[in-house]
Image 1 (tube, rainbow, N blue to C red):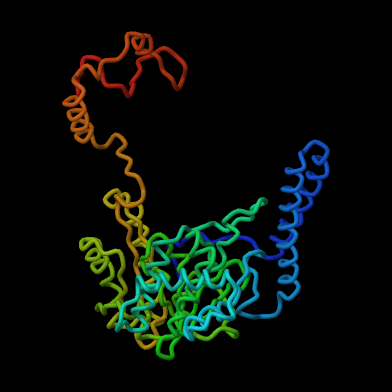
Image 2 (cartoon, one colour):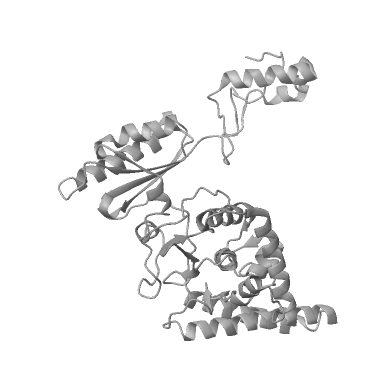
Length: 413
């Protein structure tokens, strides 16, 4: 059974070579535009344009350096999307641990101060490393603004969104900003952590070591939700939506702090999945993970895959569950066999509710409340509306018009 994700958060597209071409084009356009405009612009405008071009040129130089060593693997010094740099934060974390900040510059000292304030507010005495990790994950995924990571011609505060200084100061981050800030917090607390990047170098996240085992953590992907979908994943879970150099980065196969493994329940067999999912929905659970007492083998793989895919296809298209959002994936649970993970979003969340024309009673209630405050006169329309009562706005012809206005006689039905 292949790894399968029903719905995944949209990934960033592109590659270093493509971004390099785009940057070159932008630089050329800006240069030509500046040359044509110099005669007409004021001295201040000239200086501003030149400064912008110089900054883009600096970014282009960094891109060239990265693309030039694209075949060499590393953790730090890598450019994501050709522009956002993964840089070491060890000088800051070492200064925090030692208490000696004499080797830090002003910017690093300010970063250390801001990071220390965050940890002081979320870390309590007696916490385990796992509990500290959870606290940092919750803070990052709830406090940050998720930036799309597009290239801007005129540098803004977003240019600081790939490093802890900008993330902590402006509370805005691209994936590199999430990853390097998470790593800084972990290193400050003495927890081993590495920043991972995708094979195409368009995304980055973290690997964290807890009691000798590694786990993937992608705060960027969980930003705004804190739903643990990309928290403490093993390689088998991370592979559903991430690709990385497995020869360079350590394997993540830990069980103890795997979020899926920690929260999985055992059910009889894959044939029990519909009943189990119904229980999740009835209990308004947003997450569920199950393993099977009757292991799925080569003879039952196809039946299990078809049952689960058909179940969620049916739920997603059912009027009974309109407004719900279902996501599932299969992973290899090692000794536990296949593990099925399910995420459920419920109506009334972030998406605005559209009543359409299916709830006349709710419209009646709304009209009654409006009438109590404004009186029935609020439903009377101007006389000139009579001119349009037989006008069909879609066809432009005079016909019976089934308008959306409440009749002038005040009939709320």
